[in-house]
Image 1 (spheres, helix red, strand yellow):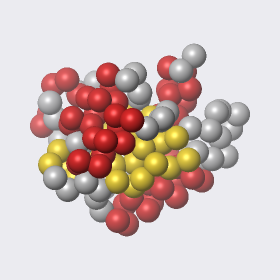
Image 2: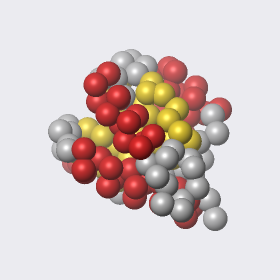
Image 3: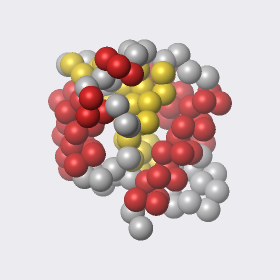
Image 4: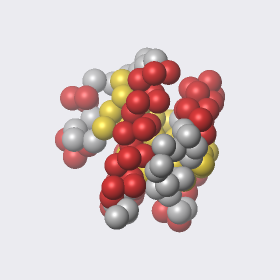
Amino acid sequence: MTGGLARLRVLVVEDEPLIGMDIEDAVAGLGHEVVGPIAELDEALNVATIATLGCAILDINIIGGHSYPVVDILLKRGLPVLLLSSYRAETLPVRLHQESRLPKPFTSTQLVEEIRDLCARAVDSSR
């Protein structure tokens, strides 16, 4: 359930099907709508540009390259993001060091906590 928060459209960019399903289940379980999961860079760029979204969860390394340009589009739109990666934080571009990041592998509990925080930030930023 959303716990009194607005129902959000959450973009999920993840190219590992099982991880994508776990994220989808966690987002839906919190009462939000999932857009995706999207596995390919070109499609993610298109959706990030034109879709009505509240926030996004993005794996860094996806089919077609890194999701950095997708993140840039979302941040320019003022949308909060959660980055998923097995990469160390220092390997990310400096411009992304301050963004929320959940290191892989992660537990279901960690994922749900991060999604709750992400969605709360999305609601706060839309006010």
